[in-house]
Each structure stands twice: as C-alpha cells, then as structure tokens.
Image (tube, rainbow, N blue to C red; front, top):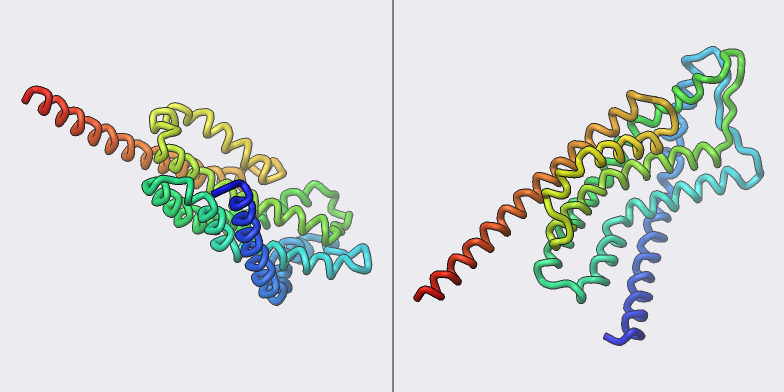
Length: 254
C-alpha cells in the first residue's frame, strides 16, 4: 500500500472508532445518572457518617449538563473498547507476520477483561480514598466539592487503575515477538515492584496505605504471571531450536 492508501485506511478506521464511541456514548447518556449516583455515593456516605456537611455542588449553569456529557463520553469510550482496540489491531495486521497476528489477537483477548478488572478495582477503593482525603478537614468544617473537579478525580483514579492492569499484557506481547526475554522480566522484579508502588501512590492521591496495597497486590501478581508465561514461551522456543539444531547436526553427519 502507498502512503496515501495507508492514510485512507487510517481515516476509515478512525471513522469506525468515532461512530462506535458516539453510538456507545448515546447509550451511556441513559446510564449517566446511575453511574453519577454511584460515583457520588462516597461523598453522600461521608455526610451520613460524620458530623459535618458534605455535598457535591454545581457552580455554573451548564455544569450539571457538562458533567452528564462527560460521563456519557467516558462510558462510550469504555463500552466501545473492544471496537477501537480491534481497529487498532486491524490497522497494523497487514504489517505483521502470521504468528504475530495470533499474538495480537491474544493481546486483545487478555487486555479487555484485565482493563475492566482494573476499573472495578479502582471503583472499589474510591470510597476509601474519598473518606481518607476528606478526613483531614476539621470536624466543624463542610466538605463542598464541585461536580467537575470531583468527577475528574474519580474518573482519573478508575481509568488509571484499569490501564495499570493492562501493562503486564504488553510484557507478554514483547516477549512473544522476541523483544524482551523472561530472564529480563524476572531480573527486573525489584524495579517493577518500585514502579508499581509509585504508580499506585499516584493513582491513589493520598497516603492511604491500605488502598495502595489493595491495588499493588494484584498488579504484582499479574507481573509475575506475565514473567511465568514468558518463561514458558522461552523454554518452548529453546526446545524447538534445540531440536532443529539436532536435526541439522544429524543431517550433516549423514
């Protein structure tokens, strides 16, 4: 394909991605209210269980509408994830070998459920983080949060954890295409744990050790699972190479 053909192909696939996100966002519009109610529940719970006022406020005429649109758009991106992940894969398929195409399919099959698992984990620790951060305020004070700022905080937390859960899949994919060995993955486990700790500290913007541990444990487990899969793959390739080498030696002796 010429450069022009590649650009046309990219435009076509971006169009499919855009249509899928818009279509999913339309459905997300009808889910925005219950999702916003669930996201707001930690603040409402704070108001019920403490002696101070806690509420989410809209500071402009359009903020309520903007908040609902933002939630619908994020829901559209999340729900359309299988579509846009497939379009990304399909765009690069012509440049991949047959074996690499199978690996890309495996990446899609693993990354989507892991992303949703990470989103779920972020959702579960959100209430703890809200309670911890607001607990630094004096008891006689009021916790009045703007809808836009709180939504941005909650979505960043949930989506960041979802992305973090997908990262080990990249390690496996890099191993399968021969870029990264299992020995390198296992040898870097100390740096990986430090990186995961920093990531969870940034994803949970507070000194909440419990939430950090709850997020870090599954990510560390996924890292070592990725290392194990890479080790099995390297052993399989080494055995295959040994057989080929043995066959070549036998042929030369004959």
